[in-house]
Image 1 (tube, rainbow, N blue to C red):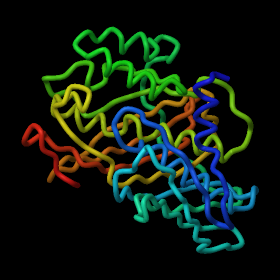
Image 2 (image 1 turned 45 degrees about the vertical axis):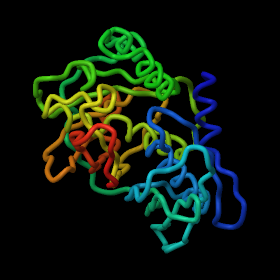
Image 3 (image 1 turned 180 degrees about the vertical axis):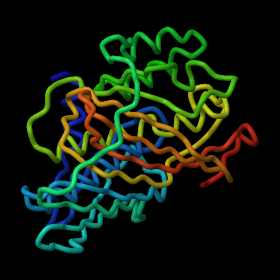
Length: 296
């Protein structure tokens, strides 16, 4: 296991301070606020710690309420909404400086048999044929060196490979609002199903709104032609998977309007099983005045 992955696992391993109350730490990554995937993953850890081990996460629905402060701990309060015969529901509120910054509802289910069908895996490129992040990012000479280093630091726990150039790699002309990324952790994980779901949740917030930018030829924060933030995030976990094995993140944007952009995606295992569905809406704004910012 890489040191970066171990550091990420340590970050996601919350401290329990009372029954149903947990505390997590943060770290500075790409932007000067808590990475949304981190707070979503930590909230799911908090929820999962209050659920019997035989019940597995099958969905989550979350809202990002305020930017998180990476320099302060986050307190996660879990509300045990329901414990049924087959399903368990938890609500989690993340608090910093006395204010809620994030809200998550998650549902867990006892495994059972049922009807089975899925959308087929789309055409793609074998991840073994794609350059790793470091090689691809360092090839973009138009990006400032500090931007490249921040991107690499944020992703060093994950082997993330773009099938085509990301928005910041080639911009200026609109492209099809569709993006594919392969990812897996940089090291093996143990067999805890919750851990794999948590790691997929963490990664899911890294690239989902890329397809919004592609539709308009924008490069994103890395080149300064848009500003944005996640607003809400939903995931459905359909089938078992491992986050330390290759997963295809097939993403598209059906709409952008009113300062918001919508991304939707399916995550497949390398052998073609549909593992996860994801939808996220985010603020996506063209900068209106240098030196000023607008609250979402």
